[in-house]
Length: 582
Image (cartoon, one colour):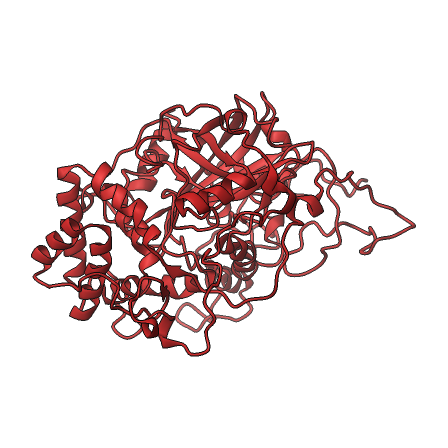
């Protein structure tokens, strides 16, 4: 008689379990023993104490006590779905990634989120939105970890944890920014490079109408390389085919806390599949150097944007979301995106915040989910070769690679792919000494925010902006903070600052030339003693005045290249190309 059952859960299959109905199951304990009823308990008589031997009860309660994993410190509240990506135009001339060959497609999972709030916070908060895509390509997973804004509040990576703290609850009052905005504005008033993101956040785009009606932006600069070893800088954009829609502060207050989740889920359920195009801006190393030298735009600066009129969008492909999660926890809460997950042909640049995220994201996943988080079905690659490596054991090691050697063995040799990317050529132009670096605020940091106010915002948008900012400032407990922030707004526009002064009843400072910041060097300070952040002594400020940007000649042989912008960038499709890339 065979000991092998003909059906059942001898080796449970994830997809089979995912699609199984309750009617097809038998109620059991976790060790597979069928039980007559889930509500029964063992006790000493009908009115006596419970018995410790009641494994069913202990098993049930002890697992219930452990149902939660730590929520994400950032992007805790989110929604997601699955779908498919298709390359419709191709990018083979610039990038060797197999997924960018015309006609290729791959399954994807997408997670949208707010940034600052906790898991139970409101979907319609005035907050940036996360927009992350896991492309399951034939060469492994590529995680495009982005936001719905093209810039962020900072460009110095060590600021990130501290900034996020200011978006959370006050450590004493335990109030959020909705009731006490002091921490929020205190940080911004001491780190003026945040002004570009503040202009976007407090403008009409600050509260998108759900997740379907918003664009996505990588924001960071990466490198893409073709099969000939030539590379360019790139920024990826996801352009909503539904168009963009936004809520006013008053409209947002009328929506349910889970508005965006409901909107996305119900649209997919009824077959109204949301779609985005994947597009890219590219530039050569020489163009990046010239962009700084001529326009003071730093491609490594997360607060700067690439002008679309100079670097138009080129469409690569499209993706749609056509399948909701069967189980939110398994497929959305446990999905883990990592910007370090890149396929051959896509490489990091020297963008310092991006470099920091390459470590931070997988480190957070290993803490939050476990060392083997990539073995969870939603995170596993879908490739046509058997994966093998020397990562073994640890908590919940589902696929522990059998009895295969856990070292590079000559007895059972593994297969290796041929090298397709010359990393020495791609990253080998860096030379220099170790330095301690902190950026400084410069006049050019106000150019893009000024363009928003003067060229993008119409009269109605300006009125709403002033109302949004002054309303948010109304819960700030320190007048000095507001005076400093108005001084920063004054560097954007005197008109903007004057309107804010009228709305708040507080007279701000006359610009930032007389101010010292605790978080940023002030390159616009008249008094040299106020130039260094927090009055630090013994600080050597940048002697080249490049503020972390690539300067002429800094890319070695690549600095001599001529522009191939016509071929590299194609033509803008006009979707998002007006007003200097905003």
